[in-house]
Each structure stands twice: as C-alpha cells, then as structure tokens.
Image (cartoon, rainbow, N blue to C red; front, side):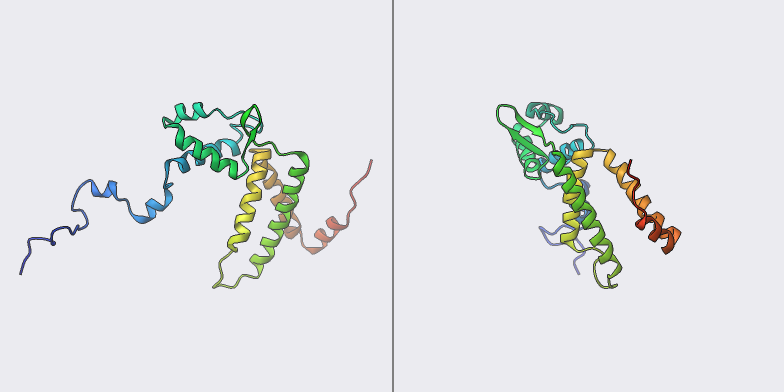
Length: 190
C-alpha cells in the first residue's frame, strides 16, 4: 500500500499555501468581474448612477487612467460598454459625456417603469412554488429602465421610489373602501 501521496501532477486541497489565494472557490470567483475593463465599468457606472458624474459632465479618459492606475485600453473598453448601455454619449467636438435624458425621455421611462412594476406585481401574485419569482426578461427590463431613471434623477430616484412604495402600501393598509375613495377622488384644480 502506497501512502506517499497522490500521483504526480494531481493536487490535493491545501497542497500549497498560495493555492487558496490563487484559486478562490467558484462562488467567490463568480462575484468578481472577469476582466479589468468590467471592474472599471462597474466603478464608473456607480459614479454615474449616484450622480458623482452628473448628466452632461465630460468624460476624461486620462483621469480614469490616472485614478485607477491602468492603461488606456481597459478604460476605453469600459467607456464603450457604458456607451452601449446608454449611460455615455459621444458628442461631436466635445468627446464623451454622461448622457442627458430629455424631459420626454424621463416621462417615458417613468411610464415604462410603472407599467413594468405593475406587471411584475401581477406576476408575483400568480407565481407557483416551483417557478422563479420573476421572469428573467422582466427583471432585465426593470433593471434597464431603473438604470435610466437613476441616470436622470440620481439619488433622488431612491427617495421617489420610497414615496411611491409608501403611497402604494397605504391603500392596502386602509382597506378597500379607502383605496376606492382615493382612486375616485378627483385632483383639485386651481
């Protein structure tokens, strides 16, 4: 009986002290971006959506190169991804800027968001135990529209969503009569 160890070329758990750091568990790997440009895109996206970079702000590629300590290639790839997502726009003789949504685009995004949330709520009521909670397409569409609203409103979007959610919950808490009264009440016109 040979107890000297595994055959040559076969690694066992804990064979080398550096292996755990070099080869993290699959779950940990799935949480990390697979490419440098994706990590840069994630950081810039967050800066845009929290309005650290506001709509209309010029994007300086070299600022990102210097602040992230990387070459121009991953920064350019990241900016291309964000342009594809609609968060950045190329403007003639100005370069790349954070996208500015026009008022009609904001209204359209709000209308779509309300429609999608309503549909998602209807679907959630009909979900069977063996079904996923929300269809993937619906989830992606909600994320896309929400991203556009965050672009337009920044942190104010979260405040508005809390207000909308509170208003939607109020009729349920007060019963049907209160909800019907609120729905039938006409807004006062000056």
